[in-house]
Image (cartoon, rainbow, N blue to C red; front, top):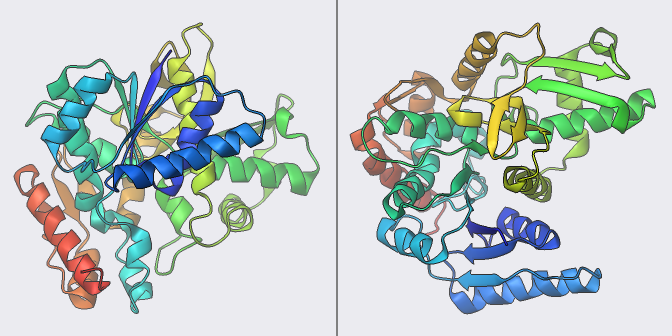
Amino acid sequence: MKKVLIFGAAGRVGLDLAKSLLRYHIDVSVADLIEEKHLAEKMARVTVDLRISNCDITSRIKVYGGIDVLDEGQVTQLLVKEKPDIVVNYAIPFTWDATKQLPNYNRVSAAGLGAFAAVQVLAPKIIAQAIAASEIDAKFIVGNLPDITVPIIYGLQKHQRLALPIAGAGNVGLIEAGLKHTIAIERQLKVKDLSLSLVAHHVHWVAPREPGYPNDAPFLFRVIYQGSDITDELGDLRELMNRSIVNCYEAGAGFSSTTALLAAQLVLSLLDEEGKVHSLHVPAPNGLPGGYPVTVKDGTIDIDLPSQWQPNEAVELMRQAHQRDGIDKIEDDGSIHFNLQSVTILKKEIGMSLPEIVIPSDLETVAKEQIRLAQIATKII
């Protein structure tokens, strides 16, 4: 049986992902920083829920508590022991939910999630190092702001040995699902007859939901219904996308269950050894910025754009979308150039001195300082 190792498994997405994979008889190893007894209780509840729903669980479940994803040695030992086919990370040292506790959150939000890219990339970077050090043959899926963090990791490989993530999960997939549902409901069409191609960034997902975000990032969108292109009939596409996101996903983190389903869909597609072609929407396929329609076959991912869209055009639009989320650019060596506006906001609002440029050798230092200051600001420590 195939095995998936999930870091950050005690969180909302991690638990829902484990539940989805167990339904499909995938062996699951779950790891989290919380103590093992507590994590085992959470997984027991997941298993009980599945049995109540008459799911015949044949998978093996292993639980590892007290696992710090920032401890490369600890992560490497676990990888060597488990030898998973796929590694998925949803662990992060400091969450955006915690940042929302700030009384001045509305102003901090305007800096963009990308302004915390150093924090977001730290855990997947260390896991990528550990996978490489363990020499296991595992595909790596990143859940931490993948539109931005995965391209950074691809740049960092110039400096150190890393296992490159194959893709992320969520973001563009969340938008695509919401759009398909909204179009079907509003136009009284059958969802199964709709085919969407969407090139979009997580900033498109965040802009209608969070304060302070500019809502003008570029994207590409095309809709086919029963073989005919109906895109021009849909009116203002940005307004349609905003409406779909707001109407399909309530405020807060309730969408985590949908993210988990999208992650499970990607995992199952990658594990399929029968030669079937799976069509999905995923962020950062093979290190690209932003999210794209893709095909998955025999464990590989390829972007799948309509013939009128050029790959270099789509990638450039996603790089421009970075700029609406706190990042001017990501260099080929993984260096991050932050927007001056974002730097100014973090300094003024929470006393965080974010360098305008973070080079690879400074990444971990900057990340840990951001974590420390954000924890102080939210009174976590």
